[in-house]
Amino acid sequence: MAHDWNSVVERYASGAELPSMPGARTLRVTGADDRYIYVSHRLWTDKLTRANLEKAMALLDGGEMTRNYGDAVDYYRTYIADERPTTAATVLKDLGYLD
Figure 1 (cartoon, rainbow, N blue to C red):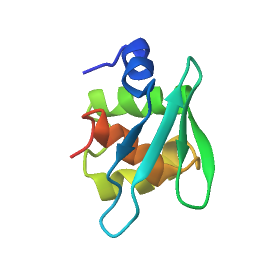
Figure 2: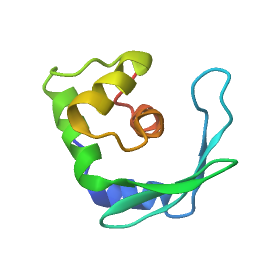
Figure 3: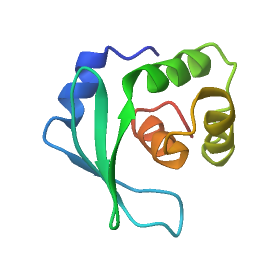
């Protein structure tokens, strides 16, 4: 289910509000470009790197990474990047990669 990055940019061009992990506040995606997805939460703003998200997408497509949302957070942090792993999992879930 490989995503064309242009479709990701288009999906988030006007922003989006994504449900986060149970008990957590809603995550706001504020935009996207060729290198990043920009996100904000109640207390912070940050960005997710395209290369890291695409690495996760490839691992998920190849069955080398769990599709379980909660477990994917730890896997992402350990094997891909310690770059907002919960936020990355939320975006991957919104894109249909995680259950």
